[in-house]
Amino acid sequence: MTVFIANSGETGRCRTDESLLEGLRRLGKRGVPVGCRGGGCSVCKVEVVSGRYARFRPMSREYVNDRDLAEGRVLACCIRPVSALEVRAIGRMGDRLAATDKTTTGATRLIAEER
Image (cartoon, rainbow, N blue to C red; front, side, top):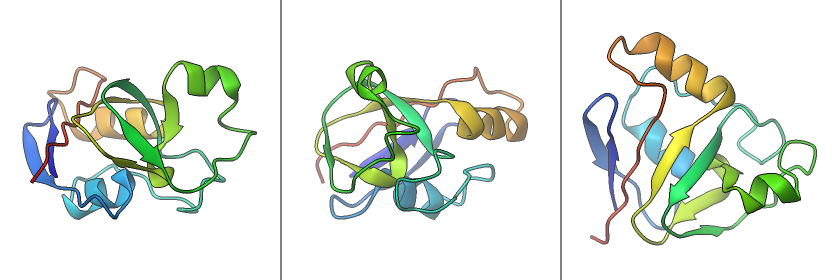
C-alpha cells in the first residue's frame, strides 16, 4: 500500500499485514509518537475520514469508546488499511506532527492504495 501524508508531501509504503502506525514510522517522519503499540495508550489516535480499515487488535475502551468508533476515531497501532484511507491525526500525534512541520494544516491525510 502507498501512504501519502498530504501536509508534508511525503510518500511511503504500508503493508497490509502491518499497522498503520508501523507504516507511518517507516516513513521516518519526525513527530510520529509511539507508545505501547498495543492499543492501550492513545498517543497514535487518528480519525479515519474516509476509506476502509481492518481492526486487528483491541483498543482500550478508556481511549476509544463507542462514540469515537462511530465517528471514525481509532488508534493507528490497531488498524491496517484495506482500501484508500483519508486520516486526520488528532491528539498527541496531531500536535507533534503540527509542531514538526511548519507547512502543516493540522490534518494528516494518508492514502493507502492497492499495490
